[in-house]
Length: 95
Image 1 (cartoon, rainbow, N blue to C red):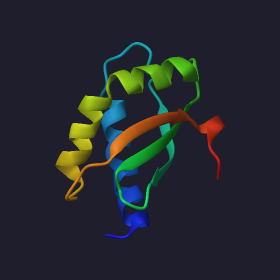
Image 2: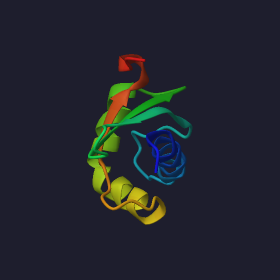
Image 3: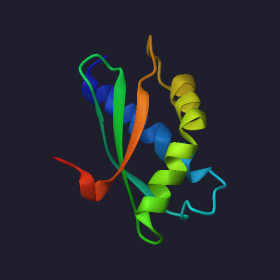
Image 4: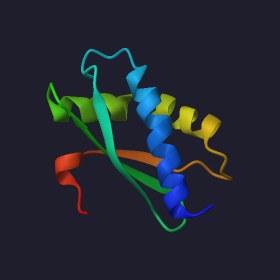
């Protein structure tokens, strides 16, 4: 699979999975702005933003739920190896 396809699928899966989290630090509307994967597909950097709430708390909550979110990606994105998820605030994005 091409990196763009993998990034698109991970974005879609994480958008749905994050919406289902029951953490009070996660606002109702969270946007997965961008996902970038490394050349070996070993790491996926996920850039998120939210209309309300503290983005730093959101990133902490997502890092806390990393295992659950990574399992969701493994179930829905067919890859030999699931990339490790790394969450960042969208304001940190280096486009």
